Length: 204
Image 1 (cartoon, helix red, strand yellow):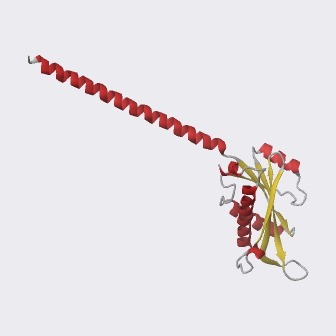
Image 2: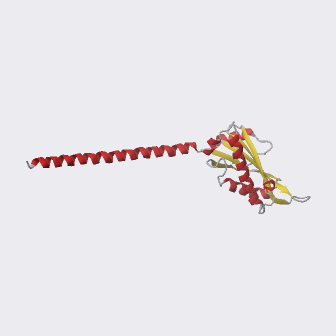
Image 3: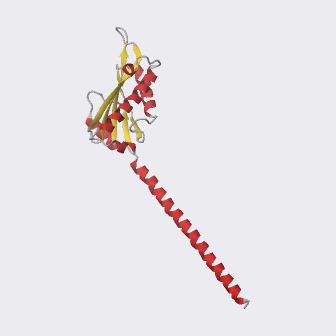
């Protein structure tokens, strides 16, 4: 009679041991599925990452001394990753394309060589103050044209810092940053209303 309780006790221990083994095995299995799922999610986000080319802005008037400061202020605003292309990888092309006579073949070639899906052709126009030789105000007009990798024109926008806020004070550099951000915001609004371009692609 002493062996029967002992046998029952051993059976309970065996059952409990099997239960713990099964439970821990299930937990590790679920953890593995979650890890694989997370890795797939990361991979999907990486696949969705796309590239956008920014050419140097055409600067008006065509004066060499003001080009580098203009480029610096323009790309400083672009690097803040605002607007409709904030999730795109920025690719800078250290040359400009004339804004009013865009070479579509060049855009296609640059996009192909850099695996870029979109390209932006910008222009920065300074206001002239006074007569004779150029004396610049701190106000600018930022213009942008957007093309796809096949050279198709998508949309165009501009931002006039003077018209948007006649009382704005500060340097021309600050105006370029404000104008660039404003132009990108305007482009985003236009694309959201567009039936020919899916903005969700840019937002992914």
